[in-house]
Structure formats: C-alpha cells, structure tokens
Image 1 (cartoon, helix red, strand yellow):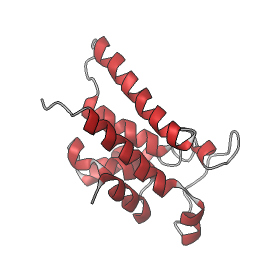
Image 2 (tube, helix red, strand yellow):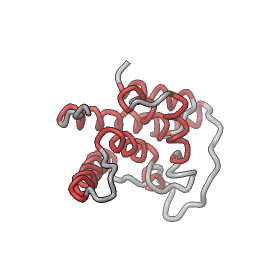
Image 3 (cartoon, helix red, strand yellow):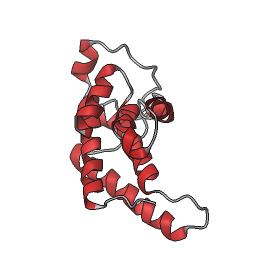
Length: 153
C-alpha cells in the first residue's frame, strides 16, 4: 500500500487527519503504531477541534521534523533550513487546496467554535474532504522525500 493509500485508509478507519498522515510514515520515522498515533492525537480537527492549522499539514510537519529536523538549540543553519522546508511543504499543500487552515478548507467561516469529534458515519465522510487531503499530504511528502533523500545517520 502506498503512503497516500495508507493515510486515506487510516483516516477511514477512524484516526484523525494528523494521525493518518503520521501513521502512513510510521516505519520511515521509526515509531511504533501506538507511538505515532499518540504523537499525532492532539492535532486532529485543526488542533484539538479548534479548526486552526489542518491536521494533515500538522502531520506532514511532524514527519518532516522526524526525518529532516534539527535537534540542537544552537544549530542555526539547521533551523533555517528546516523552517524553509516546512514552508515549502505548506506551500505545496496550499497550492493544492487553497489554504492550510482547517476552518477555511471545510468552509466553516471565520472563527468557528471548537468542536468535539463527530461520529464517523457515511454522511460524515460524504461531507468531508479530509480523507482525500490525508492522501494528498502523504503524496506531497513522498514527492519531497524523493527529491530530497533522507540522509542516514
């Protein structure tokens, strides 16, 4: 199964959007399934249902950080390079979907009230583009990784 297929499948199983993207790359980032799901669990629904940054984008950035991120507080060059990488990935998602903000992607207007997760029903999936967005985010990561192979330590 490809990363985009796995991300979409995880979302359709009931995982949130961030979990779906991170879970699609759990082998590459060296996390167990449980650790990957816990790491990303706070970011669904635009961070805890607050409809802020889209969870698929947050998931993308978590994977990018684990694959390419810097770890030392004095690694200024690493920080600059990684922030540029994050912006490039966000720009790729924005080019595809017009925004990286959950409320805008779902057409919820400005400043929607935070919401609890909805029951996953056929009607939920019919009105939400999230499953396809998880696949798109995974594809953006695949394309980035293909163009910028991860250096093994």
